[in-house]
Image (cartoon, rainbow over the protein chains, first blue to last red):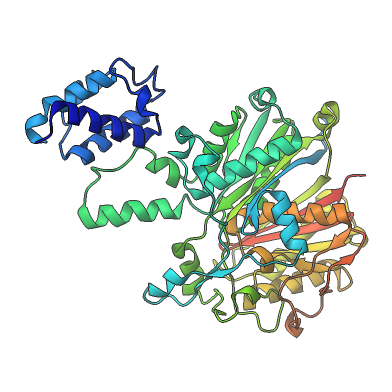
Amino acid sequence: MLTDEQIRQRIIEVISEEFELEPAQLVPEATLYDDLGLDSLDAVDMVVAMEKSFGVKLANEEAIKAVRTMDDLCRLILSLKKDI
Amino acid sequence: MPLNRVVITGRGAVSPLGIGIAELNDGVWQGRSGVKIMEDWRLIKGMRAFTAAPVPEIDPKSLLPRAMRRTMGDMAIHATLAAREAADDAGLSDERLGSGRIGAAIGSTTGSPEAYEAFYKKFLAEQSIEELKSGFFFKIMSHSCAANVCLALGITGEQWSPASACSSSAQAIGLGYMLVKSGRQDAVLCGGADEVHHTVTMVFDVLKAASRNHDQPLHTPRPFDRARDGVVCGGGSGMLVLESLESAEARGAEIYCEVLGFGHINDCSHIANPHTDAMAGAMRAALDEAGVSVAEIDYVNAHATGTLQGDIAEAGAINKTVGSEVPVSSLKGHIGHTLGAAGALETVIMLEMMRRQEIVPTLNLENPDPLCGDIKLPLEIAPHKIDTVIKNNFALGGVNTSLVFRRWQ
């Protein structure tokens, strides 16, 4: 079973690869839209990438909408840790 | 309201001969062919045509940012690169592109066939859209090239996307000509794109209209030749900036030629068969609108794809329209039939012929078919006065287009 830190690291790797961003940019406080330049289409692809990478379902649309920062994303995925 | 004169001030190309107009023109003047064997296609049951003229591999990552690429199939990537080159060639600033006075008319046969196939392969096998990415629809929509080009270049004028397979970009040039002539736009980026894909070539294969000359891929297609055996599909994108003379002169832009007339005739006799009278009608209509006499025509750039029926029908139409003394050639031997890109890519080469005052003959034409015989088919590159030309493009579905251009002096 992955540790929280390993999951956070994996999230950074996936986001970095999917959106061609430098891992160093993906600090916990980085906002997805303003700091990382992602948009609504990217948000769709982010969910797909997370589901594929971790084998989970991100079915709670309200929880997804509430994701603003990298840390929010990590917390969301960690909340599904039992499924990973 | 007086109508504007319309001129061409920019050219862009992504072709089987390389990226950019220099690669295209150099390849053509060197007599190179972009045709190759597509080995993977041999594995498709029932498929018998394995040649194509694809764009050489490029690394889009180094050329376009991710946010643009995510909604582009290959054809939209090629269209965007060609459009950028054309806008740069014309000297159009970002400010002017975003002024609302510049539009885009960019067509293709369909959206990206590669993207269609990738989606349906997974969807039909799994009945699932769970891993469907957001960019999918924007790659397959019919106006994928036009929309992506407008986004990439910041074009805020009218966006159009004529879709008529093999005459898409010829229609786009005709449409841009009308938009500029009428004063709706100061300039329009006109062109088209298509990509090499087995689902495209198989359309012609099924109709028994695709070349099967696999032993000599560099010697097919063979427009007007006795040994021609069909189309070789190509990929890429051609782009032209059509602009009002007033706008071009005010900017001090280099002008390559004037667009004088556009003939556009529908043939409702058969969905697939070529129609000599409709082809001739398109040429006649273009000449009439141009106010140009047959005696003024120096050269005809033929659509001639290398099919048995099409070349004969077009040769007959050319003979009927301009007689047997005007030089005629097709560029399909060099770049294959680039479908939605054909009209614009071939016009880019035609502009170079005007500049050099040389006629490029039909590559692979060695023994003119007597059935295509009553037209003048040069066999070597030769100096020739080329001031006024007819450019033909025809498409399945009854579309017949002709444009008349005149060198700017």
